[in-house]
Length: 398
Image (cartoon, rainbow, N blue to C red; front, side, top):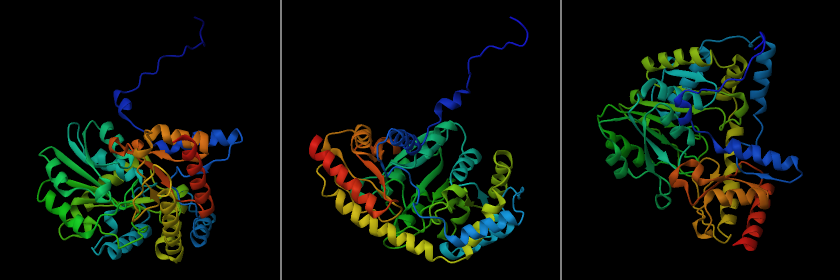
């Protein structure tokens, strides 16, 4: 072989890569875009992203920050002013004193999940997590070599966890429990009694809890309850929240974790190794989001509630579909078992034949089979169009 010529070698991935899952929403979005490129009109109800624009005051703050020089490295754990603003906000909303040193700012919601598993979970540990649930939980449990222990969320319990089942699943090997409220994909919301029962089930065991509260401001009935609010529990909880859903800032990539100070120091070190830092101008915009006018959040939540009411009522009129009323987030999770179709096949058919993009419930775990997930983060006009297309398809095919 002459010098300078190279041959393509076999890609030899680390074994752990075979255990890494994905998020089906982005795969479905790609398929939907490909169909649109062929001239087909698609109603997008697959991606969990607010369709509203980022509030103008937040955009103005970000633009001003960019023009003002906030385009360089920042401290790995976040700007001190943003950490302070978040600490004040969480102290007020969760009714527990939080210090800025207990806040770590990260680019989005997922890093807090990843850092939690990386910092706390060893190979062979057991992690209890909601199923159906956000698919990244199970993906990262497998990736770390831990044992996934799914906690079945049942429709008859409004997709809230069964406390007795949780208690039965906790063993001496349980290292971490994941809870998510309001819940993706079902819209279930844990009650105050649920939170107290979770604390009682765990008791004094040496178990940490990752509490994913990214939809905490999007609740339609009642109010949000956090495990970290209970006396003695703040140091046992890693609370995940962020700006993507609340302030329609998905593309800004800004989230945060709240945790005990000693663990926060390790999260900061992980940030140094993985991301260096979150973007400075994004963080300045985040300060305005937290401390500025909140009317856009109220408006967005009201609109999601209106859409929820209309869309769920419409789904329940379609043959083979049955949907409980979600109490938070912006998803509908109808039971489609009476259609006789599997979740994946029905989702594919609705996309390709009806022009409605949604997700198979099975994409959220084994107990999601028999359901579909629709994002209601779209206009009433498009939601009505989707309902008409689904109904027309069912009349022709069921």
